[in-house]
Image 1: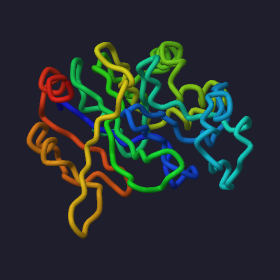
Image 2 (image 1 turned 135 degrees about the horizontal axis):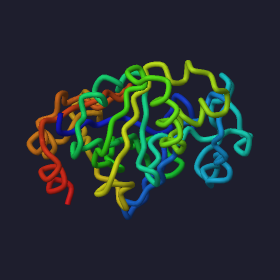
Image 3 (image 1 turned 180 degrees about the vertical axis):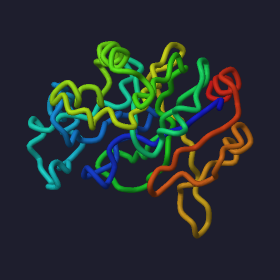
Length: 234
């Protein structure tokens, strides 16, 4: 496949604001709230994300009890793991070793709702892709152990409910990759149609499968290889 871009992070559907971007280009990666039982111990309070939010949505309700709401830490840029049983599954399964999985989200200045743009905030070089629909029981248990830092596996470990593994695809990453030091702006305003479209720079560099970057963040693909991707973001 080359490059797959997946939209991530908290937004107005599950939190009071988008994650912040600061004047120097640095930013906070704020994951979405976890909605299931999990072994995850990090919460919105323990990670300091309550500094930027007035509430998150948990169990269908807005709450400011940040210490009681775990993060759904997906992607995990420390462990270089990302999983999805949903809209990005088929594209994840198309990835091969040394392809690139990139992650983008909406960011706004702290405490503001505008201007909101889409930014690349991190990526993995692909090491392995695991399809939990296509492995036997013994292999499944080994992959669970191997992927204990993945947010979806943390759901399974908390409940042993196999439904959390149904349709699950996990990408294990390797270096180069990780969370960027500064966000890279992908979108640019178009007259009368808003901000969620690729800037010409990225259309030329990546020839992405769509020019559109939102509202509901789409999964985007490109045929460029790792070296082309790395050169484009330097």
